[in-house]
Amino acid sequence: MKRAIARNDWPRRRLGEATTVLSGATPKTSVAEFWNGEVVWLTPKDLGALESIEVSASERRITQQGFDSCSAQLILPNSVVMSSRAPIGHLAINTLPVCTNQGCKSFVPKPDLDTRFLYWALRGVMPDIQHLGDGCTFDEVSKTDLEAFEIPVPPLAEQRRLVARIEALTSRLEQARQARQAALAEAETILAWV
Image (cartoon, rainbow, N blue to C red; front, top):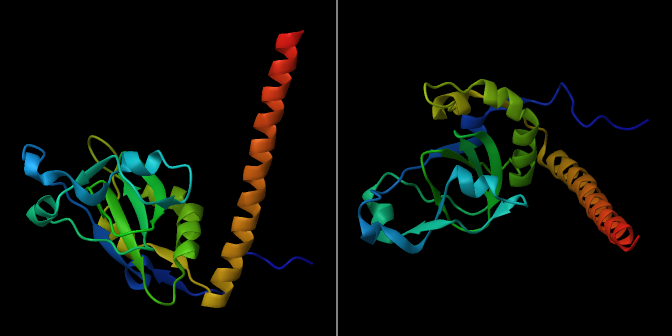
């Protein structure tokens, strides 16, 4: 009999307890000295364009002067960045220090929470997080609501076991997707000959 992936007896913790939740900010776009610098500045658009779960670059960068001019916060590597509006739900793990605009929230995990487990746990509960969103122009989920949101947090060894299993399965899915694309391309080539 296969062991259950999720268990009801795992303790649930609020994201505000299990992580430090950070908000983003945008320097004034009219000040040229704030832009085209070295600081990676992520937006929901950057997260939505990703083809992997990790992020290390952004479409736009800001200068240190731009960073200092607003309430942007430096997010340490190995945190989870989430788009919190337009749309709610894009996720990535940053591989280097970054900051974000106000359309993102970031989760810096505490020592007993594996970053990759947090990423997959958030993916799993994203429909529930999206239901927290509200707004006039577009839905947005607030920092307060995210801090109060609970996720299951098994022991660290179990978190890592689950991540290994999930990522083995997603790797197999990606290999199957690539094989399917190659087969379709070959079939189209043969049909073109006919």
